[in-house]
Amino acid sequence: VQLQASGGGLVRAGGSLRLSCVASASIFSINAIAWYRQAPGKQREAVARITHEGTTFYVDAVKGRFTISRDNAKNTVYLQMNSLKPEDTAVYYCNAIRSISPLFGWGQGTQVTVSS
Image (cartoon, rainbow, N blue to C red):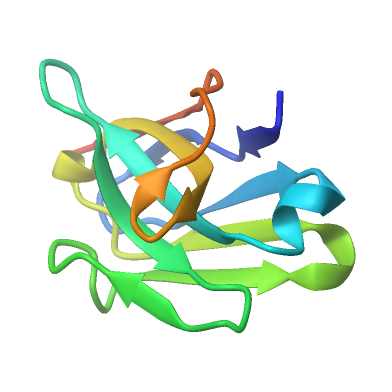
């Protein structure tokens, strides 16, 4: 597995979680990393991405609530999720990207469940 996501769980609406994505050094050092999510019955969607230089992008649905960051020393990208809503419930995945296209296969992801 090239990238491994973790940190999901069950949280009430309004709560917070922090997801972690650990990548191999060879991947982390040259690629942007993105977080995706897939809710039941829906297509996988990208929610945030961060370049190697630290430039970030968010989809409107999470803007102001989610923060993506990276720790280059740990080859890790984080997704801090605050003010969670039931509609954030999904399996969350991370992947390296080139332009906006994922580069690798999908791992197991990490389940985030937000109860109302």
